[in-house]
Length: 121
Ligand SMILES: [Zn+2]
Image 1 (cartoon, rainbow, N blue to C red):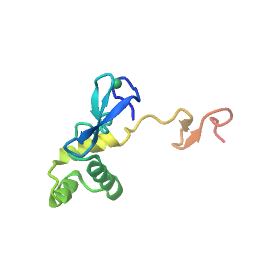
Image 2 (image 1 turned 90 degrees about the vertical axis):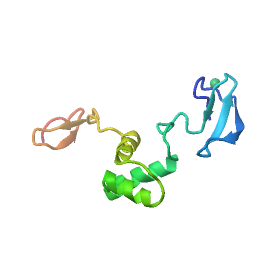
Image 3 (image 1 turned 135 degrees about the vertical axis):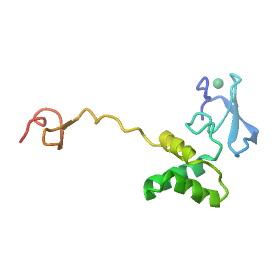
Image 4 (image 1 turned 120 degrees about the horizontal axis):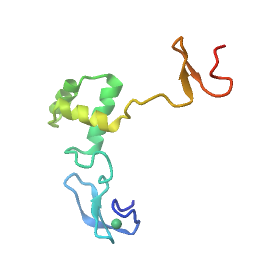
């Protein structure tokens, strides 16, 4: 693990943990952080494994945002469907342009670009 401020590995683990039981550290530069500080879920109210499970079920089982909020409410986790939407956005890559080595032919098929690959057969 590295310091989130100076990237040093000269850090010490502190004896106490965060409210969600994440390990805490202090760097020689004075920065204090925990094992989740550098991640996209740093300020999330729930543990990362719960949030990952919500997003996994959303993607794997195609459950609606509201279904997931209801399923986890039964298990004692209170969050809104908007929270599910935010977690999904944070944990899944945004759709972007096709990699540069792909071309879309006029007939709609993908094909590899490069010498000899960008011509129609
Ligand atoms: Zn540091």
